[in-house]
Length: 98
Image (cartoon, rainbow, N blue to C red; front, side):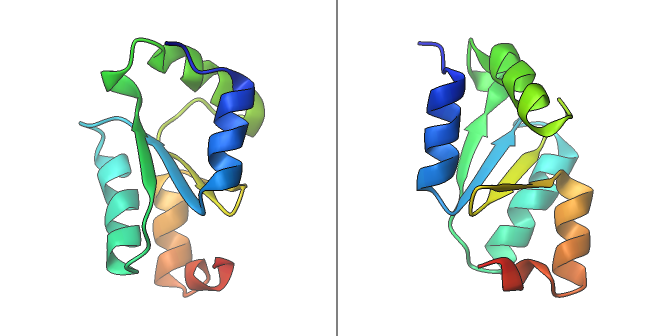
């Protein structure tokens, strides 16, 4: 079943952390590790394990201005990708977003 833009928005709105990811992506692993370190639960949508992964990536591109993974959302706000999240974590800014 294909995920619509509304469903993506609903998922982002109803979970404090959502990571749109690919299983073999090192930046995705890095982003997940950051939230593991903070002991924050997250929902990971693995785009490479879904038939509609490419479609979701296109919708995320329209929503956030980038199709790259990971796309990390905290409390409904896109924080960007793996390096962005790592940088926020390293400088202590990420924890303030909760």
